Image (cartoon, rainbow, N blue to C red; front, side, top):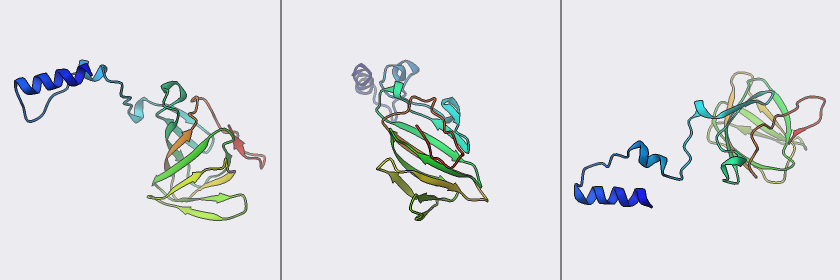
Length: 154
């Protein structure tokens, strides 16, 4: 509230075309701002999970920028989290345990709303890049344990 009052006072005293916001003013906001280079990166076995929001942030959900390495197939299951993923680069597919296959390409979203076990498959030609949301939030240190025909879960 103090930031808004200061900005309003400055504007009323001398209305510019654009209001500069000083570093001090941005530090006083409750906003969380992070750049990709600053976030926790976890190698989850068949790719990277860059975790923008975690449990400690108090938002109640996690946002990740996830890379799935080309040519990989991962059997995944989230027993404590619901997940939604939006594809921003690459191609692949998500396959449910009954064998139904759904193509993934930029502009496609899929949501695992029943803690569904699923295969996440990246194209053999290019990495798949997804923006994912998990609820409840991840702690940040979770990693998949891939292999042996069982789903990796956390």
